Image (cartoon, rainbow, N blue to C red):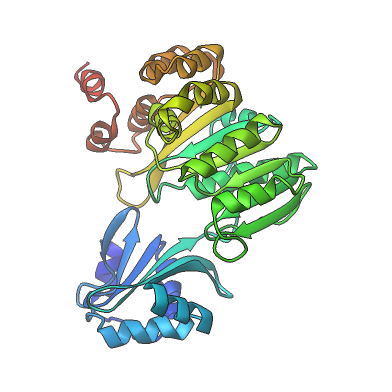
Length: 366
């Protein structure tokens, strides 16, 4: 790592959490780890490694001092009672998602660096189909992908698109609040799970009584939250949510499988009618090693897609998406191939991330 090599000879003395965070922002890191018995670690362009190869390991006393220097008394009490605390940490130079835990050796502190500027759909270079999805006034839009793939950034861009184009009431439910969304055309309320409400499900139940037009659910992780989100989408609200799934078919399987078997037929019908689209994404390291680029899959709910959902044949969705390119559908493998053909990602990355590895090998053999 060239930037790391430049800093190896002189390890700066960083006395506070804010010093570390400023340093990470200077070098475009996405995450910071300050862990007991480890050197300070960052994640840059998807790769985890020590900030300085010759940096000293942090002792239990070091991490305790760092943690207690920025935690409030309330959060210190929660850490000591529960063993962990998660929250949004704001400074005059940025916003961060913070997690502090107690483990066998001492305290570990992790930060995710959040951009303070909400990026637009155009800046993220999302397909035009995605903008079409947010023109609906009801239904369910899901943004999916692994941890750290930019789901929150995409979701904020979609909410920002609605915020600029309409005069609606937007409620966001997050854990924690990441992007601060200033009202433009819309009235915007942002609620943080754990601070303003007990859970996503409780916040969603409350949101339905607040006359919302658009509801953004930061994470749909349990039966009650998913059930309430589907109901809200069916009853005239536009619901945007996230799931940690890799593609459209797995997303639908995850949504349907949380329900008891005797409810699944009814839920399949509800989802087939309320779903507007699924955006699945991943961030792939660029071939030059100096960044990451987004590979994206887009499913649009057409009559053929709705039939697959209703009949429980989600395994057929990839074929339906191949034939649905005229309505803006994109498969993950097609997106990866496009990035490779543009010279942005390596063949190894393209092959390893492909859904259909046999077809990808045939592509390279041709």
